[in-house]
Image 1 (cartoon, rainbow, N blue to C red):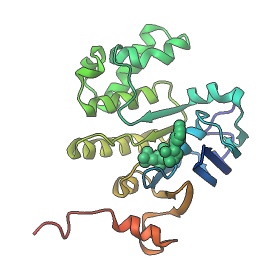
Image 2 (cartoon, protein in one colour; image 1 turned 90 degrees about the horizontal axis):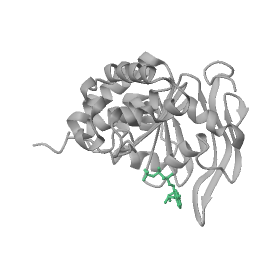
Image 3 (cartoon, rainbow, N blue to C red; image 1 turned 180 degrees about the vertical axis):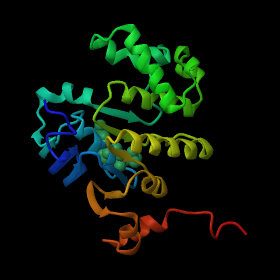
Image 4 (cartoon, helix red, strand yellow; image 1 turned 135 degrees about the vertical axis):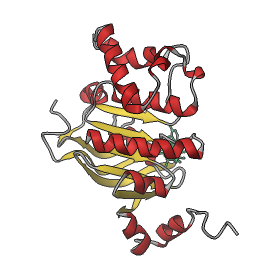
Length: 256
Ligand SMILES: Nc1ncnc2c1ncn2[C@@H]1O[C@H](COP(=O)(O)OP(=O)(O)OP(=O)(O)O)[C@@H](O)[C@H]1O
C-alpha cells in the first residue's frame, strides 16, 4: 500500500459518505478532502458526527453509502489493518490499558510487529522527550500519572510507528485549563515539527483555530461550513454558524 504522504495529494477523502445507527443519521452525504500534510479541525455540537467521521476514515466503522479514499485509493476491508498501522489514533482519556505500564501500553503494537525490546524502549524514550513526559514515567501504570501525562502517553502511543497521519478525537477534553493550554502549545509544536496530516476533533473553537487553519463545522451529520476561522466569523454559511461562534464564551464581558 502506498504511503499516505507521497502517492496522492489527498491523504484522505470522503465521497458522499452516509452512516446511520438505526434511525440516527451520524453522517449524511459528507464529501471532504484532506490534503497530505494539512491540519484540519472538526468542530460542531455533540452528536454531529465528528467521531464517526474519524472512525470511518480509520475503517473502524463502515459507511452505508459513499466511499473513503486513502492516498487516492479506495479503502477496502482488506487494507484496514495496514491502514491502522499508518494512522495514529488518539482518543480522549487515552484509552490506555490500566494493567500495563506506560511502556507496556506503548509496546503492544510494535511488539506484535516484531520490534525488539531495545527498539521499543528507544522509540518510547524519543517520544517521551518529544512530548515532555518524564522518562521515569515509562515504568509507571496509567493510574499513577496525571491526566495531562496520560494524554501525553496516548499521543506517544499514536506516534510509536511514526504514522503518516494523526487522527485525534478530543485529545485534550478532560484536562484542567492550565494543562490544556500547555498541551495545546506542545501539540501544535509537534504538528508543525512532524508535518503529518492531522485531523483533530474538538468542541472548542479557539483550540480548533490554534491547531488548524481549516475548520470544518458539522451539524446533524452534515458539513455546515468548511473554511478559516475568519470565514466562519465574518462570512457564516448559515445562521447555525453564527450561533455556534457566538456560543463560544470568552471572559470579555463576564469580568467586571
Ligand atoms: N455505536 C453507535 N451506536 C448508536 N449510535 C451511535 C453510535 N455511535 C454514534 N452514534 C450516534 O451517532 C451520532 C453521531 O455521533 P458522534 O459520536 O459521531 O458525534 P460527535 O459529533 O463526535 O459527538 P461528541 O462531540 O459528543 O463526541 C450521535 O447521535 C450518536 O449518538
